View 1 (cartoon, helix red, strand yellow):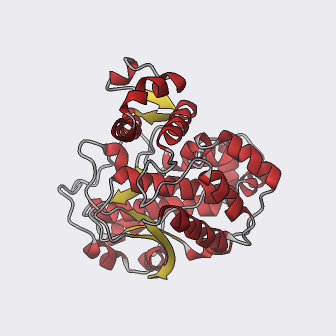
View 2 (cartoon, helix red, strand yellow; view 1 turned 90 degrees about the horizontal axis):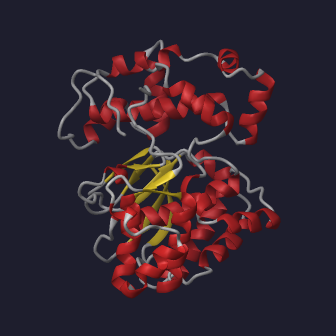
Length: 356
């Protein structure tokens, strides 16, 4: 069993729930078109009724595009105004000429607002974090709306900077859909519901990342969209994937050093370093991201003492863990834990939960 208590979702398939979410929109606006849309996307209507039905990203992409064409909106009619077909491509063109990630985010959010009105995205700095907040005066939208908004934005941003952007925290207004564990995770980050505002936060140091994409690369990206934003920036391929898997299967206190990791993967240190650099990552950043995920999850869902968490994460001194945690969240571990809602059940035996 992977050591990480936040179980990553299926890497290459879309669950039936998200297919149903998309079809529910079509059922509302153009129910007579459902058979044609399913056939065009290569989806067997009978197979769709099976509880274990899954869809590959390419066919889900065709479904998304077909629905967008029928209802004339690439945001499933969740905005104050429709987002007409072709808007995603224009969004990418708008963001492409940005100087850095911060510039790209602000441009993208302004473009979204011009198109859909609400929810209105805003980038702010708060509690030591960069936060994308979705402002709304209307009642909370379905979780599928917030997930889709961030899926579009996050996919474009990751592509622009050629790397996966670690998410610190994500919260949605409103309640989670019943019996839908697939909504509890967004790119390996636990989603919090019943929040006053919908937001996604990350390390503000990432805002200075430069944009290095060409118009030719954009044409190729758009030719593969939106399939490439559904799964592309999970740890699903290459050296980063192999390193991530190795670390998840090993207790943090026993993590290998870089030379040992390269040896375990049967690759030279120079080659591994080059591969990670090409993905915009480093061995130390991958380890830090996983440590942060462990720490947040254990503080939220277990009664592990802070000192025990520090030791299990490989910190020889609790003070070093406190410094690292304050860097991640702007708060001490104890303060962070006290600010979290009490879960229905805490893991009091300190075991590890498989969230498949």
